[in-house]
Length: 428
Image 1 (tube, rainbow, N blue to C red):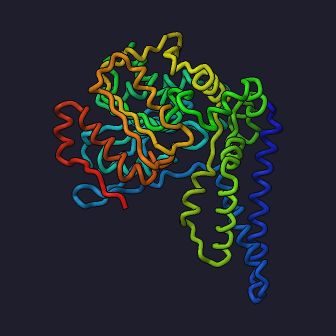
Image 2 (cartoon, rainbow, N blue to C red):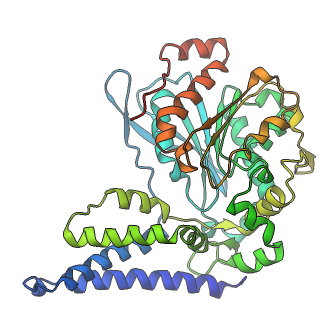
């Protein structure tokens, strides 16, 4: 399938469905039909509105939408998203809070590159901003990156993280969510061996596949069944003529989305059917629960082919991270070099993407890290999304993470942070 024609065919189908939705909505909304009692007109217009929005969102990068936060003085403080480090395949961005002095806590939030934009962590960022200076890895859509910019695989990803950590300095606390967990651990170990003074103070790893074989899921089962040749043949295409990255080999976002949707097809079908009925009855709104979720869920990005294939082969199939056999730019990464970075593992008991045990395996790799620097938390009843952006994150995990950061911030920082301790909130 490594052809531009197949990529353009998918984009044509998406564009056609968006146009059909817009046409149905406009045609069924003519004032001339207003006196008709035929319910099919309202249903047709509603279907058109939902279809148009659905297929339009698939190629639009969502906005962060974090305009302001309330400061300790009770005033609103505007938030600006500033690029701190710019790279061809991803930037380091800061959520700069106006009129606020630098915070005691400085957090680097490593966003996944697994089909969705970094904005998937919007609620995570918003929850951390009142208590910390927050920096995020903002990965770019591969379809928009010219072929002349070269490749981007798991080693390049790791080196990007190394550069970002170096830029922020050793007083940084790193949080990695899902896919980047093993590579963030590798970047920290790389710094521990090559530039120890640039290591972050703490590392919080949330629901990631450090050792995929520690607990089976549909993801790991698929990784075992399929060969690399099959995967390359099925999943990889060349970006079409519409985008700047024309000709680049990618795992297309639209193909990824089809895979995401098929995993819970019945639930998604029901959600869209109910939304059409709500629109027809006039009960829906632009920012209702359905649109808030699907505007983000449907916004997908292409991954470079080399990143996707090297992730499957090296992290899942060969288990290079789990076996402490990972090499970056010719340098063997030894996790035993991590001796002073505090590491906390967070897993969800009901996580069906990175099942409990996959992330916890990281602690076994840290053979020279004192037990006093290791911590773990298994959140009862929490699924994958809940441990970094859902109810479990808001009520339990976020306070635990901030307290862990304070406990490993050094005397001066811990003292300043202690002025506003974070307490667990009673769930409701």
